[in-house]
Structures are given as structure tokens and as C-alpha cells.
Length: 239
Image 1: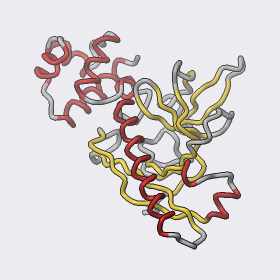
Image 2: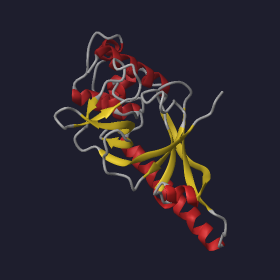
Image 3: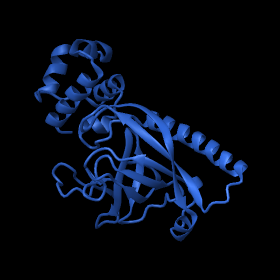
Image 4: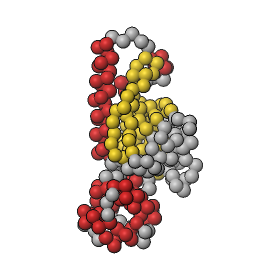
């Protein structure tokens, strides 16, 4: 892991949480000088210490290491998705009981509310509404509204394809990896949006569309990573 990146991410996450170096050191069994040295790029953390720091700050270790722009821990994301699924099932049941005769199906919007700024720490998540998609469009693309969710993209790793803050439609039924397609993937440390591909040896990789490969390098597919769904549609706001 890159010492400078870890230090910068650690400092940013600690300040956003309002935690002092002394408190972070105490809660993780480290010394304040070590935390200071890490933040200034003069030392690194062991794997065990990195996990402990990530837990206290409520961020993913991939975020601290610079592998992801999404700081959300995997456990929190799993809770968020479960809550979203429950809310959408309720909305769908209401729609069916109402006997609506229109030609659209609703897909729930799960909006992540975060602190302002790039790479901000996620504070809470909630279902904020629903968007109606024409059934003909869904059928033409082989999609079922029940299997789809709309979530927000945070970070710049997939630009220019998916800009920071854009919304994406995720087909949770599309979990089979296909080279060149974009997927939402849950790793041990967080939820990421990447393009799947294979190297020359046939091993799966996670690819960022951002042309700055120094900042967003291609990574091997992590062991145990789970495909949440395939990205099939995106929307953005032009300011």
C-alpha cells in the first residue's frame, strides 16, 4: 500500500469523524506518534492496525489504501441494500393492490447522503423515492423492475463513463461476469463500481474507465468479491 495515500486518507477520515489522534491511537491500541507519522507519510500501518483504524473511523480499508473512492464498509452497505429491498417490495405490493393500469413500473431510488466533498464519509442511507420506467423499455432490455435498484455513484474512478454523483440502474439479476461490462461489486471492505475484464492469462480484473491509470490502476479481482448486479443505465445532472 502507498504510504502517502494511506496517510492522506487517514487524516481526511479522522477529521470528518472529529476524532483526535490521541483518541484514535487509544481506541486502536497504538501510540499518537505513530498515527502522526502515518498521516505525514513517514510510517505505515500493519494489516491488523489498518483494519482496526478502519473500524474505528467507520470506513473501508480499501478506501484508506486508495483502492476505492467509496469509504462505506461492506457491513453497512449490506444493511443499506437490505433496507432498500424491503422498502421497494412494500412499494411494489402497494402498486399491485392499487390495480394500476398504466404502462410503467417503479424502481426504487436508494440515495446515499454524504458529507460534502470528494471521498466524503457516508453518514446515512435512505430510500428517497422511485422512478417509473416504461415496461416496454424494461422488456426490450431484458429487465424486471423487481430486480432493479437505482443508486448513486461516488468518486471519479469511472469517469467519463459514470461521473461523480450520477445515478445508475443496477440489475441485480445480472450477476454473471462479462468482459467489458460494468458491475457493482462488493469486496470485503466496500462496494465499488468497476468494469470487468480479463488479462492475457484469462484472470478477471477490475478496471476503472478513468484514463489516469496512475491514480486508478487496474486491479486483480479480489478473492471472495461478490457481484451485486450489472449497471444497465445511468443518469446525470448537467450544471
